[in-house]
Image 1: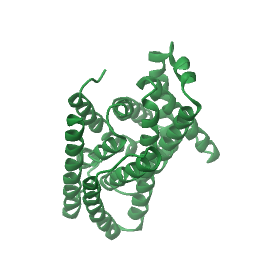
Image 2: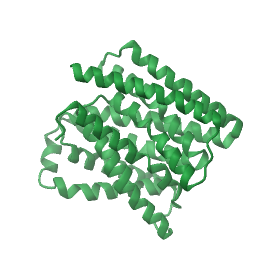
Image 3: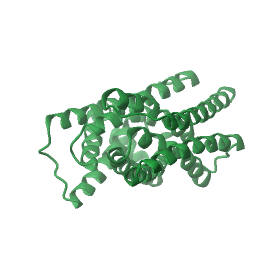
Length: 295
């Protein structure tokens, strides 16, 4: 059990590194994004379920109806996030697809303010504004690159809103639901939603290359079980907006991996935007750490 602020932030750093591998693995798959995401979610739920099989249904039915509805919303939001974000990985650069998740903390703070009446310090909005400046620099660079890149950027922005919904609704449940049981629930809901979505689109569920299945398994083991599952655990200890802001550190590692393995070049303009973004992340997370430490 995580019992201190330092452990929580160490876990947060570990999870950010883990999810950073997602874009690389996704880019190497050949199945439609929704099909890959479906297998990713359902297999993750299957792996985790034996750990809580004795108490899962007892915990689930002990929750209030409102909390069970929040699980449903959280799972669907996660599914929507994967549909849009994994599609964006194929239509813009990995660097931009991950960097534009910078809008996630903006959406997360707004949702926390609207639904949970969370007070937001003005300086946090300043940090987010700095992050948006970095995002604008990246967007300007992609506008020059072409319309397909801009489409990918738009898809990434929609995925950021869905991810914020997933985080914020999850924080409303995690206070009363054990971490592994919550992960099983939300991953299963997301998987079923993605199955229905793929079925409606008549996507094939099999017949893909060996590399595709290997990458799908890597998506389950690394960014999901070591990444998203840890984020969900930390929702009990850290604000959803802090986790959302920290996830924006993903593009730095993801872009480095794309450069090394996929030979995607990073321009000077991109580095300027990334640097501004990193400054904003550092300020936001450091402020959250100081606040939680003094609380």
